[in-house]
View (cartoon, rainbow, N blue to C red):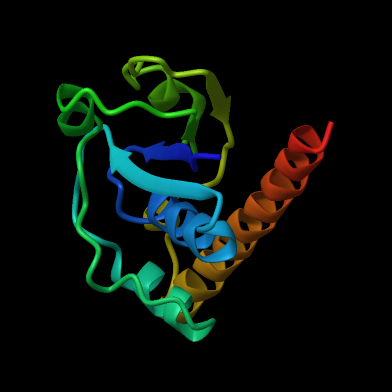
Length: 147
């Protein structure tokens, strides 16, 4: 059986989509290939890099990518999952042979205003929410595959 391909999309590909990609590839790289991209790629969020490192996941060498770059390469995905607000999700292009489009809404770590410590704590919360959502997704996929 070939691996299922998943694309995680958010605005800048600097935080939420990067975390989701890393978690899925780490938790079930035998059955999935995850990538991530942004509608307007920015720079990797250093706070996200830090909170991922805290739990043993290194994303420091990741680069941000554009959904349009991947679209122009005629990449195909079994799932395209947006991890941003609904308005941004609607800007995502349709990929060839895309079979399922899901929307998971998480707050943007880069939009949080507060002290450095508060930003780190807020980003940890988002990280943990994404981690749990990936685990739920894998549990559902396992049930679907076994039916």
